[in-house]
Image: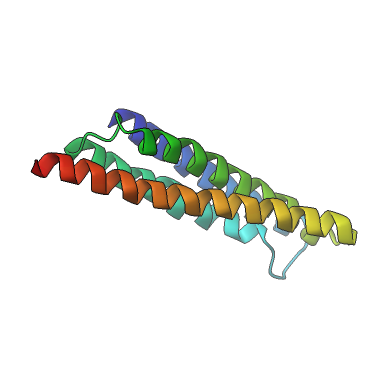
Length: 140
């Protein structure tokens, strides 16, 4: 359970850093529009901190660590979330700087962000599979 609370705390710190970076960078650059940087904060708080606080609560009641599907969830979900955050930065910084990305660069960012979301979605499915297996084992 402690491991998941630690992961949650790391995402909380990343969310706060992302929020401060968004606020200070846009203020420094005099940017007043909408940018992808504003989504970094929320993604890391909700999909990172809150998710792993919930996982910690489930891990306290269910034997999740022993399930292969749960271990795969941990890898896929964390890689997907970090990758999604990086792509939000990669999209948002040029927006604030007023840089126009080439069609290939824009498509690359979108493609990698799409892969990140597929990893997140697959991880969520594996989490539910793990929860169902662990709950069934408790009943037995």
